Length: 319
Ligand code: AMP
Ligand code: MG
Image (cartoon, rainbow, N blue to C red):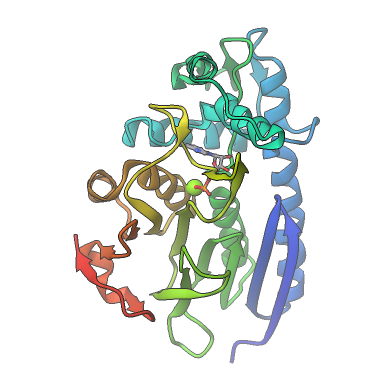
């Protein structure tokens, strides 16, 4: 017998957060996750003046800043994923991301000189971490960190730990597309995570991933974009060019026990494209990935092929 269930949706970390918690006193477990999510928002938010990230960004080019153990961990892991992905994932791209946001608001394309100049601030080497002193330092004025591509994954992992430690029999969290499941569903079957069709209205899935104790994270061009002079510019930047990535993917889904890893690598894979993205997945300890290409084909890495169920009739290949 699994006790009772608590299902709730909140708006936090700039996204919808859906939780389903099964076990005894699931409401108490929910209260603990909610408190933690607010704390993480205060830590990582780019837009809150009082967040640790804002403090770090304000002191760019001035002085190292003391950071909490949690932020140090996220920054260290981010650097690891930057190296692993050959810079496709890079939290230092924030200045260029801000340039594109500003361009969207003004409906004016940035000049290529401007993109080049801003890109010079985005090298991952401009972030220096000192573990002994527990400090982080942005070496140049104008450098900024943006945890938009990894923070929700970290938060999903933290909530998963809370579910486990507080004795939930089974649980599910969806932080704006970052999904992580604890155990199986209460009926003993695996959880089913829908894969959004990149070209269809929200909640129209082209397939599902069946999983237990895993995280499933998707990055896609369709998720967020802005229009400049009538053309769409999506939110994931290729650090090599400074422009929204133009790979051969419409979306990339990564399956891993670690949601932080799945989050970082789904962004990286989306930038790298199908072939290099698949190499990255095989060179990591992720369970696998599903790729939706610009010519509307689905590719899946071999270890998760049996976890994928297609809803739409699409050509599907192993990679
Ligand atoms: P995600 O939805 O996890 O792929 O994250 C996308 C968000 O991360 C964007 O809205 C930006 O804030 C930021 N971002 C964009 N491009 C990159 C990149 N190449 N590496 C790291 N973060 C990025
Ligand atoms: Mg991500």
